[in-house]
Image (cartoon, rainbow, N blue to C red; front, side):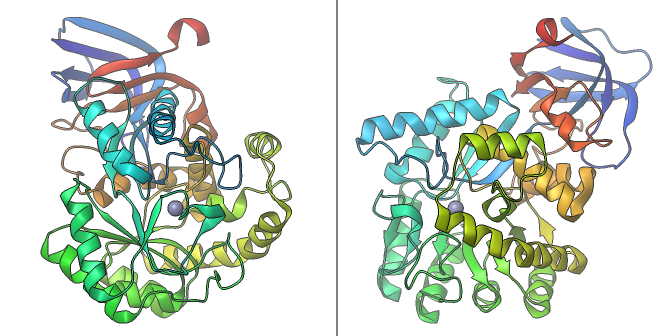
Length: 408
Ligand SMILES: [Zn+2]
């Protein structure tokens, strides 16, 4: 069966220019043809009436939380928690997030939902899974996340190797290591603390590399970033406090940077758009976290700009919940903090697909790629907030959201 999407302007995540009056022909879930002029015949045709078509959006740093980190705690009951993760992912698809990388979750729930979405049993985004985050004892623990089973505490190089193997055994796509503190946490749980021994870090990365599994490293200080990059990290998460040497190493080795700007920027004091204000009203942060986020935001932004200037590859990941809200907010932060609309869209599509090693199949609108697409009413290159004017979501060639009747 073929489906023709005609009458659209194309934002294909390869060029900063809109390609006007294009059509996209989808067959068996794959983009067969993209062009202008007279469209080919198809079994079904959707006239998009001058809307903007682009690749589906990604969030490559999520824990599928239905609330913020500091919001009500997760259900402690395993079946209920597992259900809430899937629900959270399905909701994100409804706003145009067609793929996500899950970087720490209990019960290998990400792997289970990945399989159920891939088989078509439920309609959700493509998931790329890390299983549990691996930390050390007395390591990073944002709001009791370790206690909630999202991370495992591992000590010693041999145990670290065993833990990586266990994640692989359960079908993860990548490994997540949590090597430092973060914005949340207190006492010894600070950003400057590197919690891993170098031997533990190197052991984890050595076995992962040997097994062909990329490693995402939560590293907040420049020293921890350098350790991780030198040991062979695939991506650096957060990187709140970078320096020239750290960003130079990341650029030289092609390491991806997922800055998670939402973690430091989403406070009521900093909210500068109606969307941010709405989020901060709906999700009130505890005083301590609010103050720490405000304090770290300027340095975080400087680090991000330093990485941009050095040519580091940036991918969009929110690390905040719920992703149906946070994914778009992160894209808007990336745009505002230096990437611009086109750069932010690339970070949330093409580069995200590269980070998950599927850029040959996903991340742009080009013939031969899988048809994960969104359509929005306004030009997102003119104003990235137009990504919120959602008209249609297609995943794997299937229309999963169609708002044309209500919004036109
Ligand atoms: Zn995280």
